[in-house]
Image 1 (tube, rainbow over the protein chains, first blue to last red):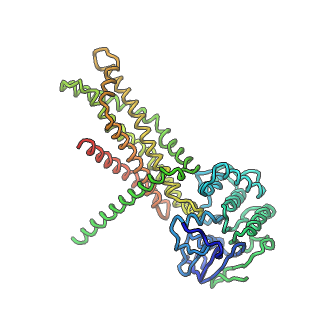
Image 2 (tube, chains in turn yellow, red):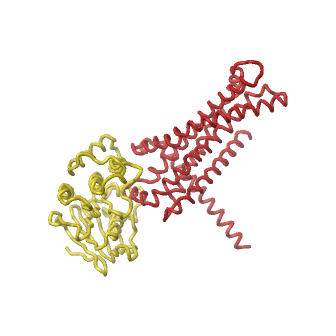
Image 3 (cartoon, each protein chain N blue to C red):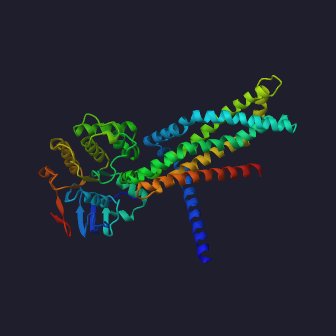
Length: 236
Length: 263
């Protein structure tokens, strides 16, 4: 497997149009270069439009026009094993109601650790230690150990933070409404960790509703996008 | 007429494609299962759960069926051989029936009844609720994570339960011998005759007829479950297809192994 081009932008959208219908985001012919350490802030008026851009960025959805590259290589030009290996370098907070964020037949802590066991050469003890360390950094004494259906929404969101920040190396963070249902004061350690990761070269896509984000000043975004009737409009 | 021929042709192509796909799954599953790097902690955990749910929990039922089947086989063989005046072949006949046919065949059906619907429903529900997409989004190979432990787990369950079935059914047959031989003998002559007549080919037949249908069952249930698209209303149809195809595969494999053994 070819090693990733770490000198290339982390994520590139080149004249991309989403294949979505009217209920999904129309990323109509927009381009974006996201370099290591950059943070792009996306605002969507409708919560139902949020997963589309995240799916495009992670190669889960193919663009109907244009090309999306991760670390200098198009998602469509990778073989299935390369695609999976690349996704293991992406941390993601999944949107509430945007699809499944949890495997219901595993406990929350098992869900959080699951992707890390597929990183080559890691042991169970290492994964458990890294997970507990990350949970502590994010202000949690322990991870919820029950089934996701019996865990509060706020605890699930915070467990998603831990899961998103665990991959090593972490090239890209895709955050869909990461503050959903969490009290504003509790999101501070998460923003701190995101900024720390940006300093280490992780690029960030932060996708949110305009009325939900009340910590904008601490994010220091590189660029911002908002949805207009004609598509995504950016400001840099 | 051309329309009918086209339909038959399309049906045959679809069937051939499905068999090819299942064979590919089987080969890929076996290849992955012998690599130590495949068995990361969540897969070992899933395999253990699969063996617990499909195998360990089916042990009491298997013991009951084996006891009844062993007794029935003994009685049928005893009365027919007595009728034809060939009672000296009793041990050999009971051994051949239990080792080569009954144990793997009945146990595979028990496991199909106990687990095929559960595995297919679980995977199909994961597909319709987006959990399979979630795994892909996290860079987890769904074949590796979902199909391999189920295939290997079901094969281990069928083999293990076949051995238990065999043990219990031979004991039941020995009890039948004590009760019906009419000469007041203990079970030793019968058991010696049974074990003397078992050859290495019988063990190979037992293992082949247990492991291959178990692997096929796991592959078929995973294939049908993960093939579901769209809504949960497709789940019962997938379950029904998985059960019928698992039975077909079991019968085909048993027939093929029997032909190879006897010809």
